Amino acid sequence: MNRLILIGLLFGVISCNNQPSKSPQYAPQKPSIDTTDNTGPGISDIVEEFRDSVQKESILDSSIIVGRDTISVRVKMEVIHGSDFLIPNKYLQEVQLDSFRAWNMRSTVEVFINSIPKSKIEIEKDDFAPLLDNSLRKYGILMYPEVDKIDKSGVAIDYSISIPFTDVGIGVVAKVENGIVSYTADQNNPE
Image 1 (cartoon, rainbow, N blue to C red):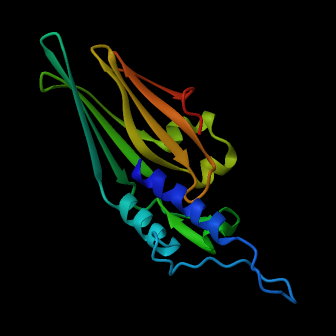
Image 2 (tube, rainbow, N blue to C red; image 1 turned 135 degrees about the vertical axis):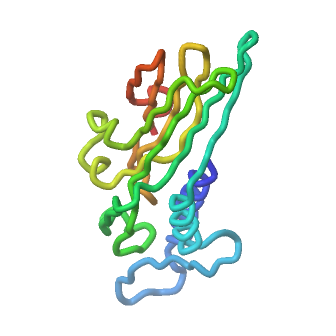
């Protein structure tokens, strides 16, 4: 969620800094973004934080108690090594990058009841392929897991599949119910 806020801040910085200059201009100039502003993170800071955050393994743990049972879910996000690809400039003009090297991500979801493993599945962007347009198939990244539902029949994990530094993306859900996995668009958060 913090990354979404940082990306939102990025667009805020861009829109604030694209105000026309009050001094006369004699030739068209490309708008510039002042990344030295000390009021918040600059573009290079946001890019570096994003790069660092996706390269680190992250783990999300959630548990609930239902009757006498404790149901726990562990979601691990990690880079799929060797899956790097370049996002082209047409998606990165707002952040003034010629290209950006990104990586596909894998999410491992484990469900436990009373500490006993019940299921373990791996989820990747390609599992949602029928829901994705061509740009998201090529340049989208599976990001930002959030446990939406936990009960005795299963779990639902919300994700975003988005092109970094853009508003191009879709909310998706992986549901694990009674050992069966289904992949759908998130009707509550289509992005």
